[in-house]
Image (tube, rainbow, N blue to C red; front, top):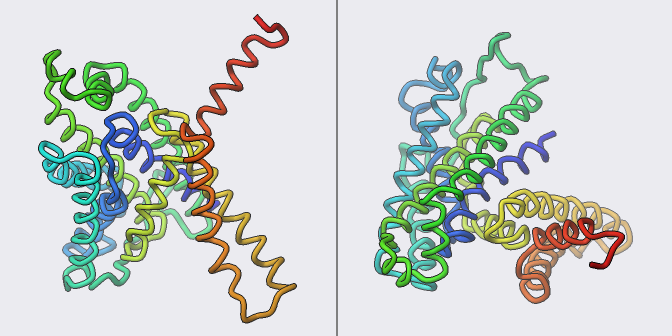
Amino acid sequence: MLVIDNTLIAVVAIIGLNLVTGFAGLISIGHAAFMGVGAYTLASFSTLIGSDHLLITHFWPLMISVAGLMGAVFGAIVGLPALRLKHLYLAIATLSFQMIFEWVINFANFFNQGQTIFLGRVFWVTGKVGRKDHYVFWYYVILMVVVLAGFGMRNLLRTRYGRCLMAVRDNDRAADAMGMHPGFTKVHAFALAGFFAGVAGALHAYLYRGVGFESFTLHHSITLLAMAIVGGLGTLQGCFWGPVFIQMLDLSVEALSEKAGAIFTANMNLATALRPLAFGLVIVLFLMFEPRGIANWWRVAKSYLKLWPFRY
């Protein structure tokens, strides 16, 4: 159940990343930092008012919304360089935000220098959510958030702002000539991405009942970007296929490492070696042979079944 919960949280984060990278065409390498902003928003409240305060345990939907809004604020701030920067330079700017986030969390006493800051157990209509029902309860909560985020993204893309995102991605000068504001559109995209990432970070914090630095590192940002690429940039279906595929890959590599460990010597740490090897190999293969991701397979399959068994 924990694997499913983590996959659904990744789906929420990828929806935001797909908005800024897939639909707006802006490279973001610091998406895990936006998740960390949402998670450490809850950690800040836990440090100030206590982990078992009424706001954290009873009004957790409000706290998740506040974490999302805080992520949107930081997303808009990070998006300001997009007014003047493009492509690789913008990617370096988002990477800088990731580095700044890690440095602040590691050295600030207020954030316990990156150590775990605990959160209390939440309450529902039936009372406190105990250990036995914890993962199941948050499964339904995260699933509801995924459904709302998916419908919200789908409807957003049908509005004027959604069309502005795609127009700026294709040609920002042509979009400017047609009356759109490319700068505002880019900042808007980063703010939306930060909101979804902040919500995902808050859900991650509640799921693990704590916030730790190791969950929001550069490695996690690269993993989220890989999920978006494998699933398919610029598609709603890719937000679901990517996290599922990467999670299944991790489980498969872990099972393969356990079986291979019984054959090879103990000096060879296969689990440590196979994970980055499989991860990098999958990204390279998708970029070479299927740059449009698994979502393109879904599109091809639907087109085939629509005409089957006829050829015309």
